[in-house]
Length: 560
Image (cartoon, rainbow, N blue to C red):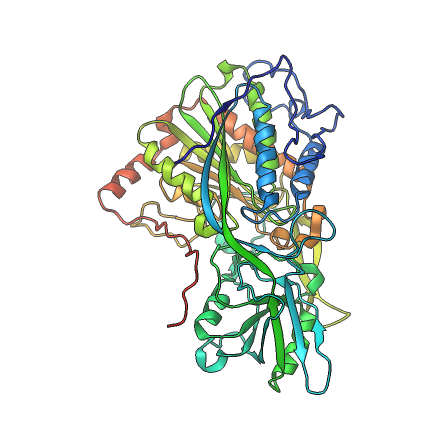
């Protein structure tokens, strides 16, 4: 791991603010009390608490302000100027805390970003990057609305690509025979997971967690499959069609594999999709354009350390790139936790806390959390690592499609309840499970589960579950004791829902769950934290089946 600059943070007599110095003319963060950077009490935390006193911690309003700051950077596609500005802001915010040391792990990616600039804020405009026009004889081109360019699709410039439309329904493979030289229309399909699966994999569920029916969200779909297939088939372009209106999913930033596709692709809402499918029946030609820039650019993982009485580290991990208020708001919670933990007396920090704000989660081919976990795996057996706590997509509200009365398809609406939220802790770590379940039970959280994992369990494999649903996967499947937290609402990749996507009181309670779990475990003996992980690591070293760590390719395969 290459570390860029180590900067010790020298504390003044009073705690400095979590504030933004990264952007020109940026306003410093102001907490709900009105004082600069104040998150709850600004004085030292008395004694060694066993759980967080909410009066000494960030409020729900503080978390909303932090989340607003993050969203205010605009589209934070990996290695964009806006993404780098956010990382700089995080660095300045963490450096303001007493005793913190700052490291950076720099690396290069093949960057993709929309060319058009946003007209209503900072950064680039993914919606304006995708264009579509229908060409009919003896008529001017008919420009159709799109919901934007599909991320990492092939840039064409304004000249675009012109070809006949063809609709391939679900279940029909994209092949050279039906797609070469055509613009393919394809429906977005989301797999359904029975809610009973959550129950089968759970340590604990709140009484109101759904048990009947199916969990169906587009974040579970492998949206990269059709762009890869269309490129291999020699298609001229690809239109991914939703069953909801364009205005609700405009700027949708997925797939996020970081694989550069060999075909231009755009999103279409349901109204435009209906018309396009009708036009495809007669082989009408269309022009598809993707306005995007591709180059090589640097990005970095930001690593901030609050020293404890020992050098053994508790790692708290989230990521920094994102496209919505939800993706990624974990940084707001982690900043609040860092401020609180930095105010604890040294005798109340038996271990060192390491905060990892990772890059490239929207560019999974060079994913920063995975990069960091690889290094942690090498260090774990030396005794320098206690466990990891990864978190993302906090405080989310449930959004579901309902049948439209004003047009075809469906429309997305808030249901009035919380989006199901999953915490993860492997059965390998009973101490982690016990502390997490106790923390969840002690807070008024709805629709919450604590799970063992979320892929097909394989008893002969170490670990039995590889997936923790999100960032925690990179640590757990490398057999590092891990806790993770994640949700996957419709608002995850769709910016249109804005701040309404988040219940900040719910986010506040989830952040307190994190803090209470950390306090419960910070003095737990290492062998108890490790649980069964060392035995699984020994089995892996002896040749036992384990999880694969292959990341997506940065470049899609090309037709032979």
